[in-house]
Amino acid sequence: GDSVTQMEGPVTLSEEAFLTINCTYTATGYPSLFWYVQYPGEGLQLLLKATKADDKGSNKGFEATYRKETTSFHLEKGSVQVSDSAVYFCALGSRDTGNQFYFGTGTSLTVIP
Amino acid sequence: ETGVTQSPTHLIKTRGQQVTLRCSSQSGHNTVSWYQQALGQGPQFIFQYYREEENGRGNFPPRFSGLQFPNYSSELNVNALELDDSALYLCASSLPSGPRDGYTFGSGTRLTVV
Image (cartoon, rainbow over the protein chains, first blue to last red):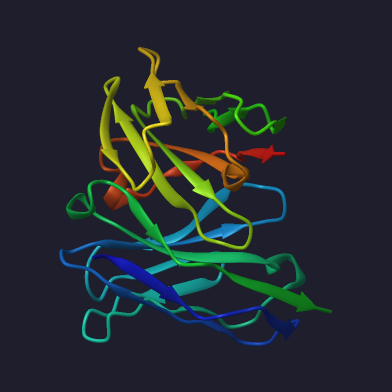
């Protein structure tokens, strides 16, 4: 069945460091791919999305490219800030999955000044 | 536009009891999904409602049930609570294009079963 595998955390970076969080997926159809962010005590916020192969999603300096050949959707940011500290979830969804989203287990990021 | 609002924010129940969680969807969104997020895990799909009918269900037992109302708000009911039901319950709303465009999540209800 469909699934998402995310890089294990936690990840600790210094401010202005480069961030990569790996995400790979397994899907039988043609899913859309998403990154969500969860700040402490809050729900999930959509960070970015890509709906087809080779699409690049971007928002707030974060980027991820939908790579069908490697079944990946890695999240990157060139220079992280303390305010980026949160848990990041990779997810896929499509009508082939019965409208449900499959989430990874989350990667906790802490950025230190 | 208003976002997704959930109530209550926190709840403590005793094993065997029943609980009802509520969700108001984002304005204009007619599809509501419920997810269970255990501590340290990603959210797991419980079910989805569209036009007041269940429109997909995850691997959860029948004691998890729901309703959607004409104004698109929704309830999640859990009967015969078990300790493992302790989790953050997230409501998400969308247009029917949700699987392509993404869902808007509420802040969740933290349920503790003792």
